[in-house]
Length: 113
Length: 113
Image (cartoon, rainbow over all chains, first blue to last red):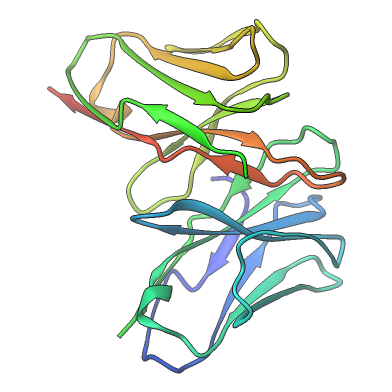
């Protein structure tokens, strides 16, 4: 158990809809990262938050947004969903050290129909 | 952007055999990480390497940080059925204050009992 909790485990929704994925980092970790894993693209970095503030952005679409709350949990919002957004979405957290490795949750499997 | 090339893409081995896989990059990395992903779960950190030439073991797993800092190797000795999964190498992308990781596309390992 990595200590990173993601909900829900599975999500099925229709095109055009909006969903919210939730992540609770490991106790004490201030950084939260979101990754998308699809069959053809592998693990792609989306966005990072550190202690409530956006720290880095990767290949995140404008239809997607995230935030980190004062209790350090994070939410990833996906809107105007398309079939191609179907993927596994992982949250990871890390400690404060510059070389602290990422610890991943078990992901949310999103299926857009 | 930075890319990591993993090989082989997949391998089928007999239980008890040793396994070797590698990861190369066109640019220098200061840290190499090896993760394993089981079906339906998030990647789990196996070994972290922080210094060129470093050789680190974790049970039957041994990983090395290449001298050129552009490659890394993971070896698994005496494979067992639970070694089945996808093995990813990863390295931190450039960017001050961020620890976003670039992942290889993975090596899928199948162990035949």
